Amino acid sequence: MELQHLISKMQSGDRRALSRCISLVENSTSDALEILKQIHIRSDVPVIGITGPPGAGKSTLANALIASLKEFKPGCRIAVLAVDPTSPFTQGAILGDRVRMSDHFNDPDVYIRSLATRGVLGGLSARTLEITDVLKSAGFDFILVETVGVGQSEIEIAALADVTLVVLVPEAGDEIQTLKSGVMEIADIFVVNKADREGADIFEKNLRNMLHEKPGTSKAVPVFATIATRHEGLKELLAAVADYFHPEKIQKDLLRQRALQILMHQLWNSVDTAPFLKQFEQARQQPGFNLYRFADQWLKTRGGV
Amino acid sequence: MELQHLISKMQSGDRRALSRCISLVENSTSDALEILKQIHIRSDVPVIGITGPPGAGKSTLANALIASLKEFKPGCRIAVLAVDPTSPFTQGAILGDRVRMSDHFNDPDVYIRSLATRGVLGGLSARTLEITDVLKSAGFDFILVETVGVGQSEIEIAALADVTLVVLVPEAGDEIQTLKSGVMEIADIFVVNKADREGADIFEKNLRNMLHEKPGTSKAVPVFATIATRHEGLKELLAAVADYFHPEKIQKDLLRQRALQILMHQLWNSVDTAPFLKQFEQARQQPGFNLYRFADQWLKTRGGV
Image (cartoon, rainbow over all chains, first blue to last red; front, side):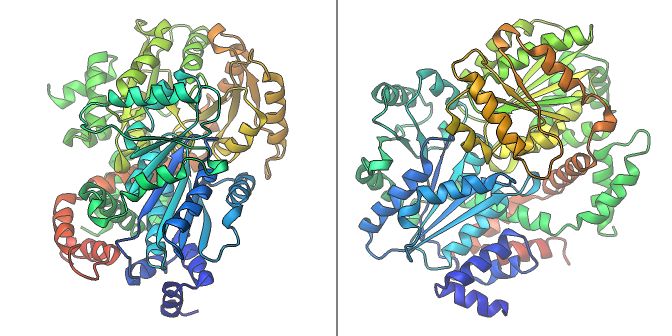
């Protein structure tokens, strides 16, 4: 199919065209940049990030949130990106997500897509940002991005999402201490899910107390208790999330961070690494080889300077 | 201090000079590349990566592993890099790590350093790889890199480490399913820590069964049970780890991945982003603004072509 035709079909709401566009961008084909340059990326589509440790119920919460958004804005169209690390094992996990989001799996207004991350040089950030922009051009009213993990991927989701929900489950108080160093600073909203579990009240209280300690902030990060499987607590949560549904609320820093990330991706994509690797293989055998000198030299001479 | 002098002090084992060099590299100062280009990076220093979810006992295992390494090679010098996300909250976590590694905190042959990760554009990978290379030039016999999380940071540690240990704790079998999609494919060795916990045997058995399912491998990933607090199971674990202590065992792919990562960092560091951001601020206000077109154009004209 001609690219121009594919893009206009995608922008008019065709699902197959959308899936094809996403695959082209995900796989960094030569068409990827062309698609991204040609689409009309709406700046007023809220991106809701959902993150937290494995087993916190992120997919179930996404599922419940979809139902709430459909009540909030009848007739709306919602896209869900679920990001999983690349793996021969992912099949199971991806199917698992789909099962948990099954309420909406056959809903024509809900588009669910699993993404694999691609190792060191093309992780979460390398494509998720671009694919989110594709979704912003495809007529969706809301985009949910769900990612597993504690660490780098959260920091990346914070740059991607206009509002970031960190989902936690009630555990021993000790667990909060560990999480402190990971996800605390990127949360716009905390969700204590599985709030019917034993110790939930104490966990929520400890969390709130800890948040009061956060230095340099005038306002504490809000905490909501939910039981996502029963859709409990979703109304209150959505009201807080909806507070972020205004383009003027998006921080300037966030826009700059995204812009830099795109710039970095495009810069890196412009490098033909094959000749570098070939020369590297030869050079590294030599005594006294230093990769930093080698890379520096290669970058300097690449352009024929 | 003059840079050349600092480097030679660092390479002769001076700790303060080492800490200073690491800080210069960590903070991407103008001296960073100069240091990296000038040092002699030994290619025969094994890097042991330790990763896994929060609370698995990674620091305690690192602590026990240090003791075992000191028996394995008397008089050896060991460096430990503990990677934590940047945070106003990290103080607690960093101190926590130090407490758990306190057996070796005053040992002149053990150097412990906590690193913060630096947001989207300079996460784990951006500096840890370079700092590990600094350590390789500073006379250490072994380098341990410990990182928290499930997600991107593990994939990065796998590229950094010559042998990657994934530490898990016995939990409900369901938990294995979740972990599947995250850390399974990067493990060279699994460690089931806190093996005295209830359900440990079953967890270990489930894990082994699952590993048999891993497609495309002729050899199953080994699983070791430990009780790191009591140093139990360390001897067997170290024997398996030591199998990787030979430069010829390092995979070619790994070396290429590291080389590409360094190339990407140097390429990105060579870009002056300030004028880009300034132009971006103006351009994004215009109707029909497309970041991809803008970045593409900026990169093309930057060199005056």
